[in-house]
Length: 47
Image 1 (cartoon, one colour):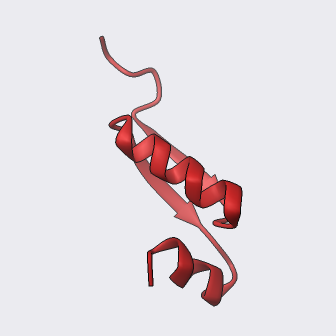
Image 2 (cartoon, rainbow, N blue to C red):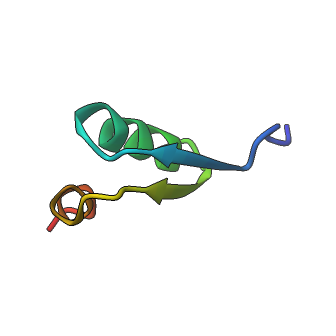
C-alpha cells in the first residue's frame, strides 16, 4: 500500500522531535528535520 505522505517534515529536534523522526524513518518515510539550535541539531544526528 502506498504511503499517503512518503516525505514528512519535523520542526524541532528536542526530546519529542528526535523520537518522532526515529519512528518515521523506521516506518519507511523520508524525513526532513528542521532545527534552529546547533546543539540540538547535533544531538538529533546522534553526535
